[in-house]
Length: 328
Ligand code: NDP
Image (cartoon, rainbow, N blue to C red; front, side):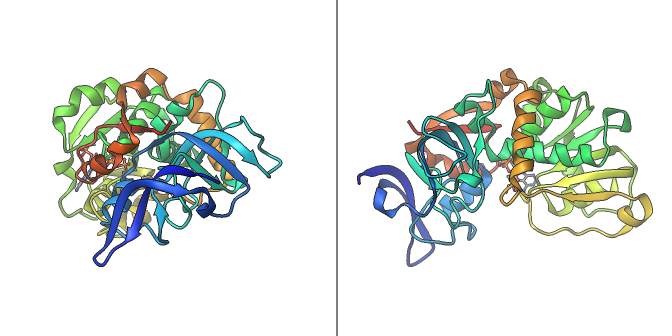
């Protein structure tokens, strides 16, 4: 038995502490597959867990991090053998099960997805939970029957992780994408990802009317609150909004008008407990429908040591696109 490097969260008198330390192999939790982690990433939820700003962590001590990609080093699960390249995210990792900011994780083999052909472990974490959630949202809109012929798609929180990947995927699929952002200085970046129009997010933050002019057939919203309410009131007859985030708040001050007068649907997106078949479909579609050169454009690399100092900036809405964390 040895030790490995990890970012550990402990309970303190007031809130929690986060530090890069050595963790004992003997303290790994139950699981039938052990993985040497190569890459992780920083998502909004990781920012919350490290800063202690929301009760994400529900077991102490905890290793933070909800996302990893790496190589299986030991397996008691018939699906996996040493040397397999895998992706793991959600299922309570970094919340109730020891997480991904670590050189080693032990998890249930049933949680893992095989790395798609042609995708590197670094690519997988450049996508991460944010990008996979963007794809879950696209899958939900497609299931609702939305095609480019039905009209434009709006993406909120456009310069963030979910938003950036969503724009790149939707543009590649041929949709007219409207990017809503508070960082209009990022217009060039958003257009390079495939946004056809840029909308200042202030246009969507006031109190929503029950119904407003129909502007888009669908949307992917990572912001919540009045922004989501405005999106719903401006959605065309029969359209749908995939709701996946709460960057502006958990509330939803809306009315039933878009639902009962325009047949608009609100599609809930959860990445954490999403069934494995849907995960496999999402990762397979990410392999085919996300342009790698665009992924490279939205990705910056940091080290495990830099996670602690970088995490607060994602909560401040200052991170553009995606951050990958090099573990080993
Ligand atoms: P990021 O911080 O990368 O992106 C969020 C973006 O939202 C920001 O870049 C900013 O975009 C915008 N934003 C931030 N604060 C506000 C505000 N007060 N009002 C309006 N817009 C704001 O985070 P992620 O992309 O990683 O995650 C986005 C959201 O999705 C988070 O709430 C996260 O918890 C949620 N999420 C949910 C998942 C699920 O399973 N349902 C999985 C993954 C993420 P801009 O500067 O362009 O305006």
